[in-house]
Each structure stands twice: as structure tokens, then as C-alpha cells.
Image (cartoon, rainbow, N blue to C red):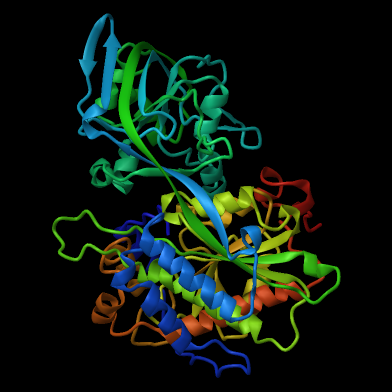
Length: 560
């Protein structure tokens, strides 16, 4: 699971008071998922021998081969490129030469250096091996534009040939998921207006959520992006040559000649006001050196053809990501392998078991079921984004996406969260499927985290495809276990750490609940089966922001 930083204190606050229920796990249906099968898949995918399944690594290739052959053994047909189970994703990996990062501020003819990484940090350039840019600075608030929400932080500003200075985050007045969607467009908006660089200012509010120092743990982490047919990185902008993230205290110097001080701006934020942009009256030079390596990594794609003469040409997409983060750089821990048992060996295992349930159906569903196991989720949803741009089936024939990312199988969950369920007709589908297993559907318990916009399904959402992202809820069927506390404990102690492995989790929690994984797979199967057999394709709800903000008109049919 990518970039789902959820502070432990926040988690504990969220789950406080989540009462456990005492209902028992329902008896398995005639066609039911196997806990043993899920256990076997997880034991392989989370093994030390796969070294954390780093995108582009030999070990991730082995994991992908395992997944492909499992789908092949079920009789599913290849749906990748050239009649294979693979869709190879071309990638560029970039690393920053740490000593090369320089930030020079020019004020009234005097030059001052910001220290790296104490005052600022930067990442590598995916476009260039060497970048040097000197330009005036312009403050543009949050750098957001939305006609629907009456936002235009670039109003009356000329940023062509200049470096824009933006606040991290987004206005508190915006709904969280909509705000996250708009915030993801900041780079594009700056580039479209001719900016040559972006400086992002860390704020005191952000410091409380994620301290600046935490980001410094990832200074040596490479950046990665998929490559277009001409060899250039996707979602990158050649004219944006400079970038930096600046500590809120160090950033005050950028406003030394401005009509308002940075302290004034922060006061406006505390008062829930949106700052208006202005010229800063200073300029800066940003420089860095980067090294590049072009590699590839596979998505694994298989299809169960539908039975209806017409609807078989439409597809229900079931996704999970197979990659994780490889080796740890934490010198304090002898165990260096980030096994990713829950993130996301569990999700892939449930997908494989879902595929088995479909393969064993005596009567195939009306629509086809497309299983897409993507790479590069941890690097920025890269495999999913590549598939969304180059789908192996027509994009307008993909009717819905059900995504599996990090189900926490450490307690017998009594409820389920379906992020995005409130945006489309899929909400009722998930509720009905969960009810068949005696599981309740709960509302998003942490909407401020905007999790709907932060996993692989979101790349298809942006193409107009309705989607849900399924997660175990905070209630437990075992009255002796508090599911919410266990879920929060996992995030605090094991998320993106070497201890997200089977032995460590069993040591801390007593068992991996593969039986809960089977319940999850049954629900996942019934969601996809309902979508596949219902004549009307899923649709965005009329009042959903995503009904008009994303994708193509063919998938915007709204309930009246």
C-alpha cells in the first residue's frame, strides 16, 4: 500500500470505542474460499526468498511468474500482451546524487545557501541527469484550481519562467477525497502555466501530522516512472526542471521581501483562510544531479470469458498489487527484508482464491472477469497507471474495478470498509455481498485520510471507471479481540517494516487469520459476480464529485 501514512495516535483515536460483536463466522457456502489456499499463497509470496518483491527486481519477477502460473492452472486465459499473461511496464529508475543538491537564495544581490537536508530536500529528476535553474519566486498559495469549488490560486499571477512556491496540503474547507484529487494536479497546473520549478513549503500543521524529519529517512529512495513510447517519463513535465521541499522555519527567508511574511501566511491557515498569491521579490537557483536506469516489470493479467453473447465483451476488473518495498535501510534492525505479508501478499492471495471460485463455477458469469495483478504500486501506482493508459481490453468496456490492497488478516473482522462506496452504485453491491457472509458494511472511519484516492483503483477512477477499495473493518467477531486496536497496532508497528512477515505477526498477534481471508475472498467473489450478472453497468451517483470530474462521458450515467 503506497503512502498511506496514518499516525498511530490518530489511529487509536479513530478506533476508540469500536465495540466487538459476538456473531460467529457463517457456515461456508457450497462454493466457498479455502483458508488453506490463501495460507499457501501468502507463505510463498511473503517468503524471505522473494526479498520483499521490489519493483523491477528478480524476486518480483519470480512472484509474478508464480501468480501467472497459478492463474494459468485455473484455466484462465492470458490477457496480457502478445497472447501472454504479462503486460511489461517500461520504467525509469532515478537516483539523486546526495552531495549535488543545492538551493541558493538570491536577495538584494546577496546569495545564501539553504542547508541540505536540514533546511530542504529534493528528489532526483526523471527527465535529466543534470538540472540547474535560476528564476524569480512567486507564491501561489496551495497551487490549486477548481471551478466547482471556486478556487484559483493562480488568479492574477504570471508564473511563466518562474519558480512557484506552494504550501503543502490543501484547504480545510474542501471535502477530503475531492481535495486529494485536486491536490494531485498541482504539478500539472504549475507546468501548464509556464513555471520552471516548484518549491513546496512544509507547514506547522503538516509538522503535527508528519514531521519533516520523517521524510529524511527516505532520502536515498529512488524515484520511478513508467516510460512512454518515445522513452520519456509519463506524468512529467520537461520545463519543470527544479524542485525542493523546504522546512517551515527555513522557508521564512523566501518571504523576506514579500508583502506578507510567512508567519502571516501561517496565521491565515490557522484561521481557515486561503492565502492569495503574490511575487516574492527574490529569486533562487536549484540544482541537482541524477542517475538513470531503464528497467521493466510485469503486470500479470488473465481473463475468465463471460457467457453472454453481448455482455461478455464487458469486463469486471479485479486488482491487487504484487510489489512491495524490498530491503530496509534501517541500520537498527538486523532483519532487512520487508516481506509485505499483509501489504500485499494477503491481497494477491485473496485475488487468486477469488479467481479459483470463478474458474470452478458450473455456469460462467455474463460479463468477463479480468484479473489484473499490478506492479509498482509502492512506487506511485505505476503498473496500474500504465494499464489505465494502455488497457489490454477497451477502456470503455471496463465497467467496474474491485481493488484489494492490504487486508489486515489478524482478527475475525465483523465489518468491512469499501472506500468509494459512497460515490457509485457499487456501494449497495458491496453491502449485499458482505451481508451474505454476515459482515456489515461500515462508513469510512477516517475520511480525512482520503484513502479512496491512494491505491491502484484510482488510476481507473481517473478514466471514469467506478471502483471500490476493500478493507477489513475495525470490529471483531471475537469479543476478546478489539479489531480496531489490532488494526492500529499493525500500522504503528509493522506497516512498511520487516516485521510485516508471517512469523513476526504470529508472534505479536497469535495467528494469521486465514479463515478471515477466506471470508474476504467470498465477499470479493460475490461483489464481482453481482456486477458481472447485472445487466445495468455500475454508475457514478448523481451527487458524486467523480461523476463529472473524471473520465469519459460513457461512464458518467448518474442515478436520477
